[in-house]
Length: 218
Image (cartoon, rainbow, N blue to C red):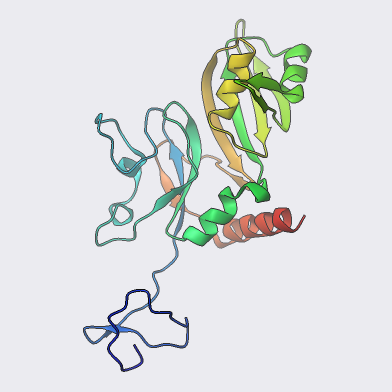
């Protein structure tokens, strides 16, 4: 570093000031990558699975699967049975800002349930339930459409407990048939095909950054 041999891997580095070389080649910061994936139902949010199940990495570009490429990590999780918008990045600091409890970044889901979403059900969702000694609430609950025996409901969460939405409906005795995340803050899944990925646009990245900053400062 700066012309001197350093063997301490924990030696402090001043970014943008210190010159770092390995075997005579300058070390440069990795390019920051931000992807959205439309996660299919059935894929697990892990790098590998001992049961041989499909993972989200089966749907990523080869360069994002490691080694020799830019390893990407998921920002938060979607359980195996859930679908929809999942972010992946190699920017761990940015990912932490999205998942940090204090940001309370809204996450929007479309949920198909085996019940008719009437006024009473929506009120119960907004009021909250007690699940295994833990109070679980949703920020908003809106009826989208109904069939003869089931309904689609839009749920917005500003917190994310483990299996939050499924546990809320479970406490009300209602089966969740499908669960899709369609937005994270201002970022919308849109028409991205199932199993497909694409980079965030600069405008999308900026809008997310502003939303995180506004929540953190609010």
